[in-house]
Image 1 (cartoon, rainbow over the protein chains, first blue to last red):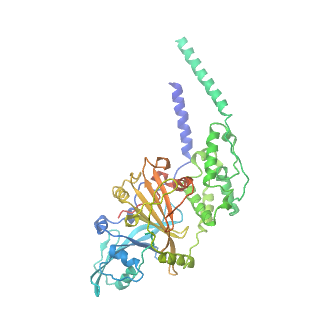
Image 2 (spheres, rainbow over the protein chains, first blue to last red):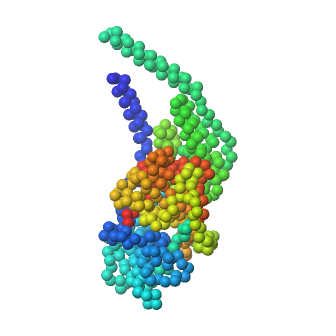
Image 3 (cartoon, rainbow over the protein chains, first blue to last red):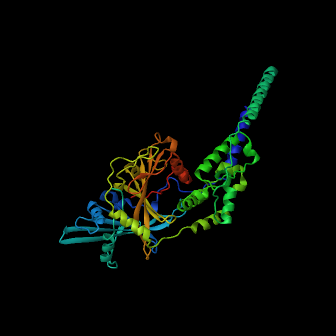
Length: 166
Length: 315
């Protein structure tokens, strides 16, 4: 039995020597980006929207993704959109932060807000509805008095779809 | 008892003698570690080069300097393999053969490998203490490499490239492109949910990372290490076009990269099929099967996270 114990001891020492100098920094393996995640209460998946475009504002240190339904996808792909009725768009905005896993990259951090634009009615007289949801819980903002909604609607509807092979 | 004891002693001695003979015999097996001429050595700042020479050149250049204990078998065989693989992935003695963009990308990869403790290899460092990078060394590399990030504002070439793609005719896929290792292009990712986005200041690109239904379910179930078989991650990169006010939007489509999880089929490449398809023509990247090794090597800093960099956002 003795040789086996010696062997074990030697191998253990060897293994310890190998691992002693190799403390890997914590890279949050297996974790999700919790602070950037959308709250379950927002039920975003049920809306069935797909990504149209992404954007960054360096001065405000924010990044955003524009999602939309089929009508919105078509609207954002056309150079001069024919019809806006039926368009549903949601712009989700996050703070940006350094990516702990890649020096040189920045990723979404804290969830800031979601803005939706819904267009109904007839082509001649479309009804445009704007809604704002704020904070990590995306709480619906009932008072949008301080916001230039016309400017926000213009900004959201003005985004063009990212180019993809099709 | 005495006879039994003597018999055991004899057996131990015989085993020891056999081991000695094997040990001596194996010394005659000498795989070659040639040092070919240095054709285009790394040309960065002297302090940066000194760090690479100290910590990387043994395996990543044609100037391999072996210590006496590296030359003893069986270690020598492992060293020969490390040097061969090291030079294939990155050879500072052939640095000048890389395009400037590839040199820059390689420097960021090097830095990320160093800061995550992926390189130099831990088992190499255990015996070659002098190769360990100090905090000051890392700071020198960070300072130099951070300085290579040059932001492009209202870049005409990028704006024109976007216009050309917008004007291009629709390019329908008639046949599914595959990489040289047989990893297929996975159509339909544009209608998948997304996992995250990234802003890559190191190469002026913006990325959106999509996940198929299995990947999205894995995120919702919080079972992503390892990812389940059938999960597919698609990462799309575009030029990052920035205006004077600091607003960036996506420009020309550059490529889509896939990681396709199948722990059986892709067992040889860490359980993932790795594919990159460039331009709107979906051109497979990689002329030889070595390209998959390139993918894995770059993803090695996140080996403990099933080789996935993205920190997924639940939506």
